[in-house]
Image (cartoon, rainbow, N blue to C red; front, side):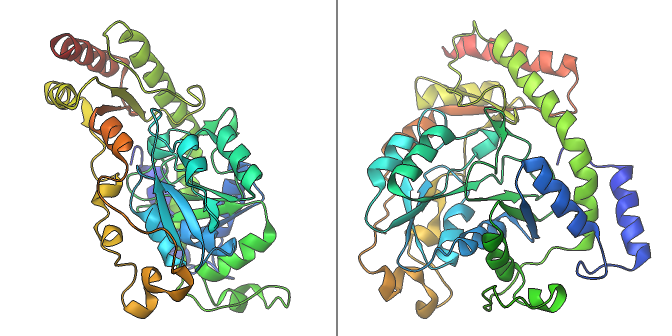
Length: 386
């Protein structure tokens, strides 16, 4: 969470005092945010959910991905990316990242097999993936492209907002994201059929509130409705996002510019002028140097990539894909023969890059003097490490 204040307090107060806490037919905050956010992302439709994970799950369901399908995911992402694939009965295939810290298009193409249905590029830490290369691969192999933009709210790729470059996309609005309501998410799409099918996954009783549609498939699912309180918070937060992103992009460019002679190697950027700018990242020559650099800059450097790596996905590595054998995609007959032989050393390239990479966080609340202190700290540490 970057900024939250009196405007959010007043928005929540209005909803509570109105007693209109249910989003369908009574309240209007969720619906208002969905219209505004779809326009902001540059797509036709948006549907709020309870989290980024449920948003990604709904997007996959909207695109009819399920048992018998393989979905390519990167080795560097929060476990929820792979969990959403399992939630629809499909199998995640884990591939390497490259020096952009995002999914490697070459690794994606190499991993495509006869059961591959989709690719999920993840815009980790607000860093855009190489969407041009991935789109070419998806078209060539007739695959679906689903953006996991949970950490990419406000970012773009070459001028196009993240989330508008695929068949469907998911966003997270939890506490740690650029735009927050504490916990929440949304999936977006330009296809009304995907919206309606995905919305059934968000609320299986959607037809109660929006009316029965004989042309829309209905099915039961657990649901993940958003609240009017969350919608109210998000409407205020959306008004804050543009200046916040501008500030963080500016801070990142200043840090890179004023540490350019330090000897540090910034990661390669796919779209430096359009990314969120939430993190400056450097890849050092060795893991030991990265560890020492992080210690010397404690309080400045956010750290290393931590749990956002496949080696930390215990339930997936252990093939515990559901609460019972009957609901475990790893044991479903439709998935027999699909690729699910995961080992902790299966993506050594990714582990090497991540073990040598450090992150410095920006913040729209930082002053110019604070950014200057961060730059001084980085340069001083670089002299001792390199």
